[in-house]
Length: 73
Image 1 (tube, one colour):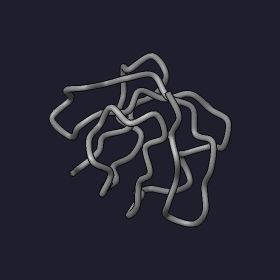
Image 2 (tube, helix red, strand yellow):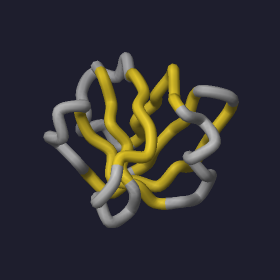
Image 3 (cartoon, helix red, strand yellow):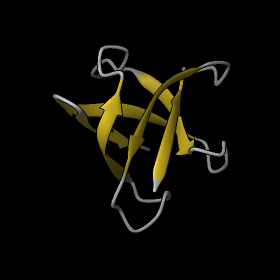
Image 4 (cartoon, one colour):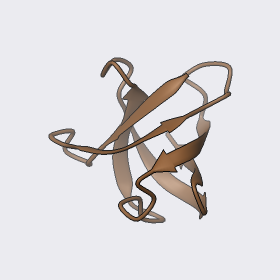
């Protein structure tokens, strides 16, 4: 599924990614193809959801390695 990552306030898109997780509601959402990678900061909060803007949930980036990351609810 295609993922949209917005800033903590949800007012601006920060990055896009893709996920092979079963659904957007998993506790730890694993994403790949993160673009751009430099705007995602470990231990920072974001609104993460589907690329059409639905399912947006506050999440913290708990792991980042290159263009992959994990966001926890």
